[in-house]
Length: 218
Ligand code: SAH
Image (cartoon, rainbow, N blue to C red; front, side, top):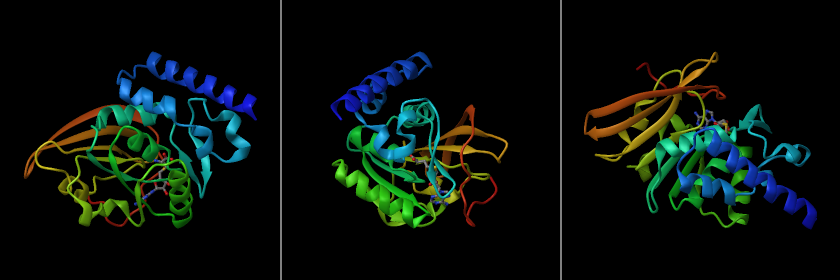
């Protein structure tokens, strides 16, 4: 058993070096990834692949995001200690763990009950206190808004406007991949005033779709 732990620890360090080589610069992000046992968020049969820079199936046709994607989105969000962050798409709970590890107060919404329950248990067993809820994340989490950051881990064809309006004024930021099944553009919105937003478009990615009735055209 100790042998396996050591192998995972070594692979985790190699993954962090790989992410750095691929352009991730934020040391707090890399440190968090360097601390979290990704193999625990993956089904036992696939654990050998836990530290490859790949998305992996987690059941219900969903995936744990590729480590580079997690690092990239988290770097764009740049959550500070004590900030309140909403994640849309809890999935395996790994991204939520990264945000907790960085000292954020984490809220996360997942539409699949089974994934939410499993992630809740896992996160608690690892000592992370994220607040999880089952529902449509496109509606955000009104009662707990405003958020310093919102991170969407599934692809939206259109921007869910509720999310923009749950960002803190000023300075709240939303990181969301926008596009259809053929690919998505990572998009960062920063709320600069009550009805003012600054938008930047970044790299191309491929996520599982955000499934919602609420997404409205931009
Ligand atoms: N952040 C996750 C990635 C999971 S994949 C991780 O670290 O593992 C994206 C997740 O978004 C899937 O679990 C999917 O079920 C969920 N999802 C899709 N549409 C959603 C919606 N409208 N509201 C909440 N979750 C949604």
